Length: 105
Image 1: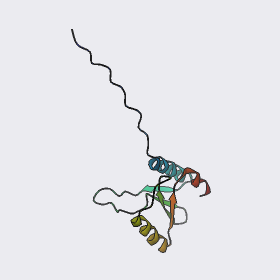
Image 2: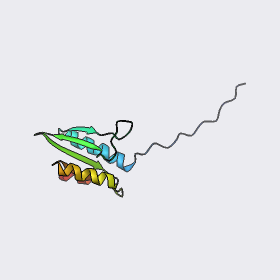
Image 3: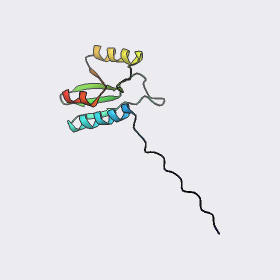
Image 4: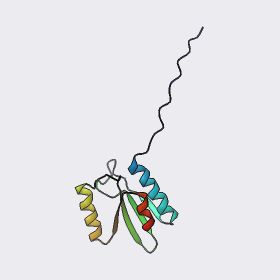
């Protein structure tokens, strides 16, 4: 007679980290506005550390960089330096901490 294995408990559903969930909301919001949204990657040999998370391309050749942070997340010094550089070049840089901040954009 074959033995039956005891039923395994299913692991709890994965929860998105607050930053990741907010990033998804931001991407959906900007896409729904008709903008092109590009996720900038910082992983791998071609990644650039310190760059904002999202590149948002708007009509009229307007470009906005969006840094997504958890409500209690802090911008690193390298990120702050990159934000200053981008602003000095005339780009808009946003630090997004809550979905409610999207309403005013």
